Amino acid sequence: MTQSSELTGGAGFSFEATVAAFYMVALLGEDTAPALNNRIVSRVALQQTAFGEPLDDIIVDAYSNSGELGRLSLQVKRSLTISNATSNADFREIVKNSWATLLKEEFRENVDRYGAAVGTISEASWRDLYNVCEFARASLTYQTFFQRFNEDGNAGANHLRIVEAEHL
Image 1: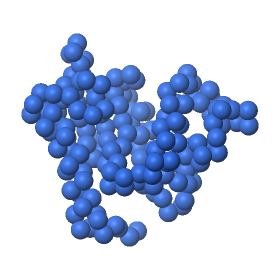
Image 2 (image 1 turned 180 degrees about the horizontal axis):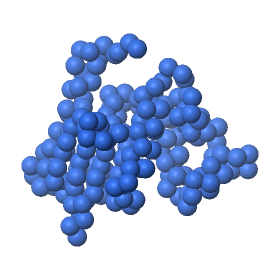
Image 3 (image 1 turned 90 degrees about the vertical axis):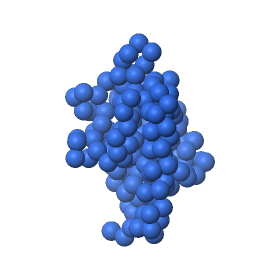
Image 4 (image 1 turned 30 degrees about the vertical axis):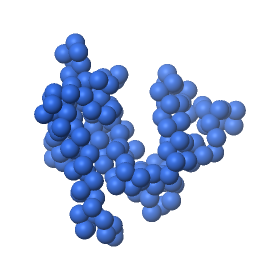
């Protein structure tokens, strides 16, 4: 598989380091950071595949006001294309690893979080992906989520394209 000149030239790593720096600054300042729901950063770890983290780029542990520890697991991409093109492995990998993170025995719903930190993404794709995520949050079961994509459902073809992208 060919690699991006940004990655081989170091730009991909520089973007990951920039994202990690946000969380490390919060760690040093005993503060919160993006996607932590006001939790205070207590640990930042990078490249954690060897330690069982499917979304391995940045792992952030953070405490709530009540002392409850939560974990944020992130995959970092300088840019991300959301499509069902066979060549678009990055998006499918993020979805697959997000699912694996959710299924981990120690994952706590409504406490732990997972996702991707992305530098550039098309506005339309971002909006469609955001809506699919909102559909998932509003669904009580996976059956009710997938009902949205039936002929009588409230999701459009642009949303279905995102859901189907992971299965190619």
